[in-house]
Image (cartoon, rainbow, N blue to C red; front, side, top):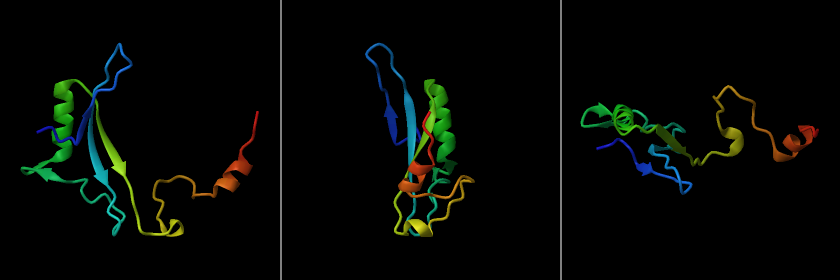
Length: 97
């Protein structure tokens, strides 16, 4: 039991990079990652993931994937960043050096 959905080992042909990855899907009804606090045998899955990654000597990652039935304008942006813009206005606001 690793707490991970994937263990990837990409390579450039000379070196390998190990990655232990837990995937979480966005709940389209609540727009929350409701499984983020998932427990396995009473233990938080994140703790298992981190322990196993440390044991293997590789980093642990979360992979968040999303789907929503809400329209783009109805999404709540709680990331503390800029409000979404259309690609046209974003392109106009860029300056070229």
